[in-house]
Structure formats: structure tokens, C-alpha cells
Length: 64
Image 1 (tube, rainbow, N blue to C red):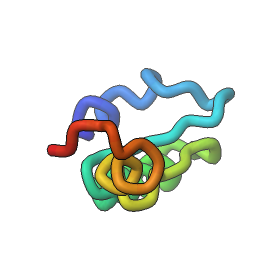
Image 2 (cartoon, rainbow, N blue to C red):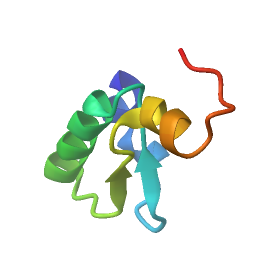
Image 3 (cartoon, one colour):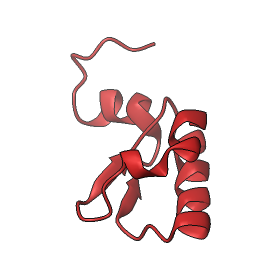
């Protein structure tokens, strides 16, 4: 998160970008910061994080 906040130019403003973390809480916070501070409008949070993805979409994924 720190690397992205310190270098927001690493993210494109021209493409839809899904931001995710383990449970979706930190990624949601990051998106709020980027939208407020850098005018991003193309970022989406993976609700429930990669943990929910593993449960609901790809249960073959190794969970951590």
C-alpha cells in the first residue's frame, strides 16, 4: 500500500483496475485514498478480498 500511495503513477487511470488484499479491508482503504488524493475513478475493490475469491470462485486456490 505504501509503495502505491508514494507512487500513484504506477497505476493507470485509463484502465479498470481491481485492487485486492487478503480480506478486502486494506484495498478498500487504499482506493479511498487514491480517489481522494489523486482523482482516480477507475479502481474497484475485490469485496471480501482474495479470501472470498478462493471461497466463491476458485476453491482450488491455496488459502493463506
